[in-house]
Length: 493
Ligand SMILES: [Zn+2]
Image (cartoon, rainbow, N blue to C red; front, side, top):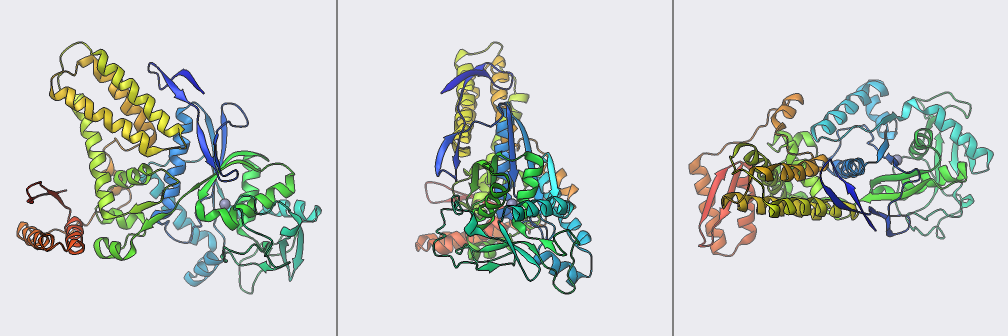
C-alpha cells in the first residue's frame, strides 16, 4: 500500500507504508497507531548510577531515529522516558559517597541529558524520575493486590506470575520449568529463570525508604516503568522500545503488571535494538577506554561521527564498534557536509535539468522507503550517497544547473531531519561539555616509521600486525590510503 503525499514541502513523492518488527508477534507488521495521527511511545531510560555507556546510546539513537521519522511522516509523537533514580546500586553508591540519593543521581542525570544533547537526541515529551512517582507505583501495586496478583513475605510484596497465564508471551520464555513461588528481590538477577519478582521491597537496615500505605520500603524496577507508562500514556500504548536485553525479565514483567491491573493490552508494538559489539581486546589496545561518550570525545572523536555510526546500522543488526568504523563515519559525515557546502558556494549555469530533478525525487522516495521498512537506515543512507555521487559527477561535468540546487538540497534536508549530522557544530558541543580533545600527536618521521613497519608486515602477510599498526596510527589521527601499486599515502585527520 502506498499513497501520494507531500513530504517536507516538496513535490509529491510516493510514501510507503511503515512497517515495524514487533517482538510480541515475532513479525514485521504494518504500523498503525491506535489514534490516527498520534503515536504514544515509552522508552526505558537509564539507571543513573554512572555515565551511560556507548551501548546504551545505540538504543537511544535508534529511538531518536524512530521518533524523528514518525514526526517527519506527520505523526504527533508523545514519548515518555523514565530515569531510574533508585535501585540497589544507587543506594550502595550514594551511601558510599556519603550523599543523598537525590544528590548522587542529579549529577548523572545532568550528564546523561548533556550527552543526549551532544548526540542531537530530541528530548522526550516527558522525562519521569522514578522517585517522583512513588504514589503511582503504590497505587498500581494496590490494584494488583485487590485482584489477587500479589503476596507479601517479610515486608516485601511479590508478583505471583502463576496467576498470569500469558506470562512469557513477549520473550517466549518457557515458564513451565520455573519453581513455584521462587522469589527474587534484587534488581539484577539471572535472565533464564522466570521468578516471582518484587514489586515493593522492605527496607534493609540503614537504607533509604518511603513510608506508604503498603508499608515502608522502595519500589522494584519493573513497577516503575509500568506505573509511569500507564500514567502518561494510558492503558494501551503504541510503541515500547528498549535494548534487546530488556525483553526478559524487565518488559515481560511490565506486561504482567500492567495487563493484570487494567485487563487491557499494554503495548501494541514492542521494538528491541540489538547489542553493540566491541572487540574489547582490540579496542583497549587501540582506543584506550571507550566505555563512555566523554571518553570517546576526549580521544578526538566527534559527536556527529558517533551519532552517524550508531544510526547507520539498522537497529536489529548487531553493530560492531571499532576505530575503523568510527573513522568511516567521520569521513561519511565530512563528505555529506562538503557536498552541501559545494552546492552553496559553487556557481552553476542557469536553468534546471529534468534528469537531476527526477534524480532528487527518486532519492527522497528511496530514503523514505528504507526507513519505512523497519527503519532500515542502511538502505536510506545508500539512497542519499547515490544522489551525492551522481550530483557530484554532474557538477564535475558542468551538467548541474542552478535550478537543481533546491530539489537536491531538499533531499539533503530530509536526510538531516532524521540523521541530524550536517551542521558543523562538533567543536561547539565539546566546548559546552567542557571537553578539550586530547589527540596524541606523532611527528612525520614517527608516522613514516610506523608505516614502514606496517609495509614490512604486509609483505610477510602478517595481517594481524598490519591491522594493529593501522589502528595505532589511527589513534594519532593518521588516515592511510593504500594504493593499487602497493604503496601507501597518509594524511592527518
Ligand atoms: Zn523499563
